[in-house]
Length: 323
Ligand code: ACO
Image 1 (cartoon, rainbow, N blue to C red):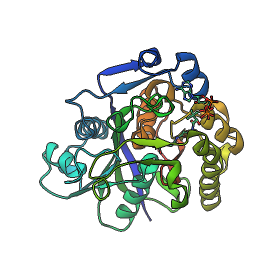
Image 2 (cartoon, helix red, strand yellow; image 1 turned 120 degrees about the vertical axis):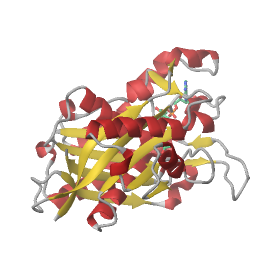
Image 3 (cartoon, rainbow, N blue to C red; image 1 turned 90 degrees about the vertical axis):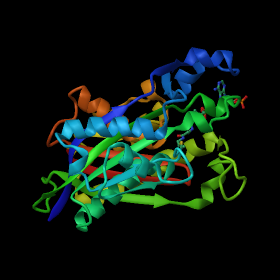
Image 4 (cartoon, helix red, strand yellow; image 1 turned 135 degrees about the vertical axis):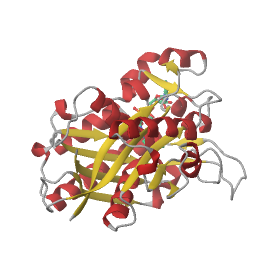
């Protein structure tokens, strides 16, 4: 059977690093509160010339280099983002243009923090359905542009950045020894809308709006939702927590990451954590963490890797893949 194997990963971060202490001048908060409640120590914040498109393009170049490919080798670009450069055209098409691609097709996908997990699952189905042989899957966000910088309950949590993967069709035997995506599980439930949303949009206010979140409410649901989809991919694949080499969760809050790993029985040394460096970068968080772990020599060819995310909607999902 056809599998979608990872050929390369890359990432890009804005030049400016903003440490927690800087928020003490903006809102009533402290480095100590932010570290204790979230694990975040710093985040990158995009300058005017750094956008979802420019960061996504930079991450795409790095993933292509790692794969030993050029844009000519790619059939399709799928960009997970909730902060596109413009309402339209899709930022994916702008990245396609910047990469000099005059063939193939590109589109955006919006599932907030779960965007990258949705995009990898979608790309896998395009590959297995024969619609594409090589896909650039990108998660790129500039959440700093939709934050209310006077709201201490949200502005300290998010950051900007991008990560990208090249997925390629390969022949597999149909077992979990194959390289590539082995199982996925996606969920959404719109009854949770008010807990995490942006209070603007083209069809309502005609403005971009700001992120609004009831953090405690999101927190309450996060661990149960994450374990639900992870247990689903375990059931679909026959893989258990002990079989995993790496757990790469969405990086929103260290306490959510720790509680999820504990509930799933995943050993601490298998958990990739970057939330202290990047904050919550929404759809970019999982590919940024993947690029970081590969860069540190942790994730290697043949390793069994579990991705998961949960975010606005609510949306939540998990992907199991062999690197
Ligand atoms: N600095 C200091 N105090 C603060 C801050 C701050 N930055 N923010 C809130 N507080 C205060 C609150 O006002 C509250 O004060 P009160 O008790 O007087 O009312 C107190 O700290 C405790 O607030 P809680 O909200 O209960 O704190 P909690 O321990 O729940 O941590 C947090 C808040 C970090 C937001 C947590 O709830 C969380 O991580 N939630 C999940 C967020 C998440 O995972 N989002 C993922 C999806 S994101 C997406 O999809 C775009």
